[in-house]
Every structure is written in C-alpha cells, then in structure tokens.
Image (cartoon, rainbow, N blue to C red; front, side):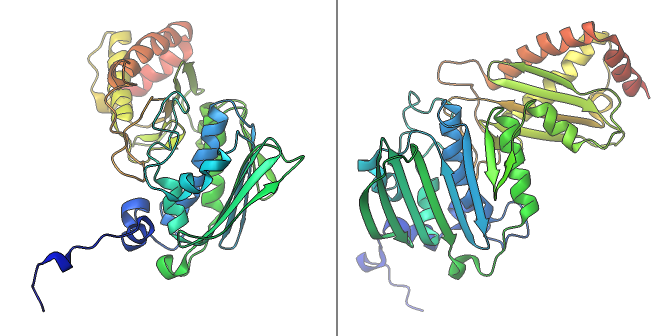
Length: 357
C-alpha cells in the first residue's frame, strides 16, 4: 500500500460526483424500499417538499404524484421555477430561493441541496417549469445535462413538473411500497388542510388536520375524545389509550420528524407541567404520559435539523427574532390546554382517573 501523501492525493470532485460517492450524507441509508426511511423515499420527499412549500405560500392547491415501478412523477401548480434559473436550481449546489425567508418563510426545504441530490442519484432526472405560457425543459443523467429546450406552452398551468428514476447501480434492486407512499401522502394532507394530493389517480385531502391523523391511528380504545388545539404556527391533537407507552407524531413545517427534537421535548415537558398545575398535584411524569397518543405540528422560520434527512429538529428558537421553541410551546399548552380542561370536565375527569389508575 502506497502511503505517499502529496499534491496528487488531493482531489476536487464535481458536485454530482461527491453526491454519488457519498450518497448516505444526503439521503441516509440507501435500502431497497422495504423500510419507510430508505433512501428512495427521501428522494421522493425532497421533490415533494418543494411542491408543498408552494402550497404553504398560497400557490397551487393540487399536487399530482404518479409512481410506476421505479419511475416517479410530481407535478405541482405553484409559481414554477424562474425559467432562466432552472438549470442552476436543479444542478448547482447552494443555489435556491430558500436562503431568503421572504420568499419561503417557513419551508422545510431550506438549504438548496435536496433536489440536486435527487438529480445526481437518478439515471433519469427531468424537470420542466411552466410560467405564463412559456416553459423550459431540462433532462439529466447522473446529474449531467443531456438535453434542454425552451418550449411554448399555451394553456399549461403554472408550476413545476419533476420526473426521476433512482439509479439502481447505487440503490440496487428496489421497490416503492404503496403503504409507505400512502402514509406519507396522508401526513402531507393532515399537515396542510386544503391541499389535495392525487396519488396514481386517487385523491387524498384532510378537513380536520391532526385530528384526522389521530383518528386514523386510534384503535377505538381511547379514554376520551381527542383534544384538538390550534394556534398560529402550532397544532396539537391529544388523547390517552389503553397501552403503556408514549406514541407521538411530531412535525415541523410539514416534515415528519420521526426522531423528535426540541419541539417534542418541549411538548412532553409542558404537558406534564400543565397537568400538575391544573390538578394542583405533583403527579409522576410517567403516570401522566403513559398511554398518551399525541400529534404536534409547528411552523418554524429557518428550521435547523440535525441531519440532511430532517428527522430530528435541532432549532432552539421559532425564528431569528422569535421566542424559544420551548417557551412558545409551553405558553400555548399552558393557555389552550388548561382552558380546554376547565371547559370539558369529562375529559379532565378521564385524564385524572387514568393518572390515578
């Protein structure tokens, strides 16, 4: 083995070469699609998050999603990426509109990396933007441009179309599992009431947000009807079941943070404190939280996640000039949850009996 360390040892990689050499840095584990956190689902989410961000900014109420074997198509009806920047936005690292919070104030796609990773890790990546009757189409293979053209598109609605096929030389043989896709789609609709997602021709939408999510997960053994609380930048749904653990669904800016983070820690703490204050008893925290089933969603400006896969929130504050995540959630629960318990004695009694049981 030659241990020589010289100028010749130093390499400079193209943006797509680095992503393809170290894909785990961008999509986590690659997998084969048999687990919901496998890389092929991360690729899908990176594209889909951009479309959801458009909806969150008030542009486009429908997103089309079609998956056929290994081929994925996502079409939104937002503003469409500016045509002159389409190549840069999809293939130049650290290029995007989400560095300026004025354009995407509380988005989940925040660092200009995600869609480039999808591009680099796909054998075929095709992106087309439609704006005011004009469109631009760019096609890539492994992150390299193979075709681009400007097209007159009269009658086409504004928005962005993305198609891609993950590279089997990197991911191996894989399959998209319908149950994981449907779960992802449902979560998007729960977190974005008014959004309709058409997945392979079937429409998904939600009228009641996290309340719909909790009702979907409950087995009918809840101790009291789910408590649904909403405020600016926060939504909660809470009940207790018959189990012995704690079951949480935590989200930030529409991103399912399966590993929790600062928002979930703040919720667990504030929930216990509010219960103790309401009953004026120093109950053990485990007695209060045992069998809880809850969903929490917050909107954070410029969120900080602990990895590119965005499964754990690291943000300390709600925004550059906002309160801390801990204080924001604590104040909301202290006021809204306490008020609910005062106005709904049956739920308050059920919670007390559960704690004492």
